[in-house]
Image 1 (spheres, rainbow, N blue to C red):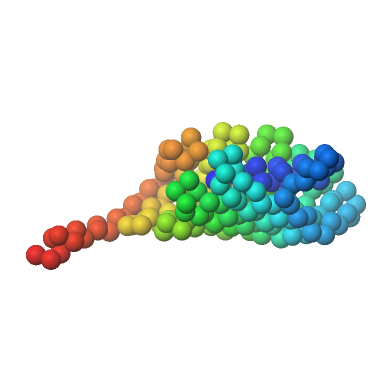
Image 2: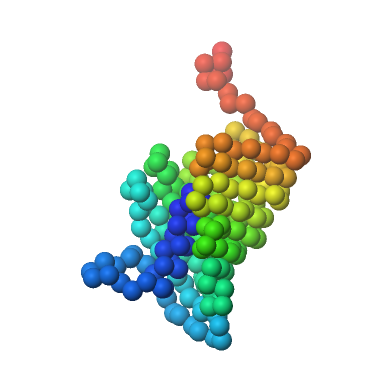
Length: 187
C-alpha cells in the first residue's frame, strides 16, 4: 500500500515533466495548474491505474505544490488513496498533508493519517514515513490500530517487508475481545 501511494505520487510528478510518447497517455487528471513565483501548484491532481499484479488504485489530492528550485520535493494537501488488495478487500488512506521526496523515494504523511480497510481494520497516526523503494513504513509518533477483535496503541510502529512484519514499541497496550465459540454458546 505505501509503495502504491508513493508510486502514484511519482507518476504525477513524471507526467508533469515528461512529454507524451506517441499514443501513450497516462491515466491522470492534473486539474488547474497555477504558477506563482517559483512555486507550481496543481489543483485536484488525480491518478488512477493498476498495480503490477493488476489491482486497481486511485490517488487524489486537493493540491500538490512544488518549488522549481527544489524539484525533488512535492508538498501534498488533503491526500486520499483507494487501493484494492490481493484478497479483494479495499484500503482507503487519507492524510491532511504530506511531503514526497522524488530523489530518495520517501513519502512523509503528516497530520491525521487515517487508514481504513474494508475487512474491518483501522489505523490512526499523526505521522508516517514511507520508504517507497523498500516498502517500509515507520511512525515515531503515537499510533492506534483497531483490529477485528481488539485494539493496539503504541508510541512507535514499524512495518517492514511490505507489511509482512509489523512491530510496535514504546508503551504498547493491547486489548483483545475473545470471540465466542458458537458450539459453546448453545450449551
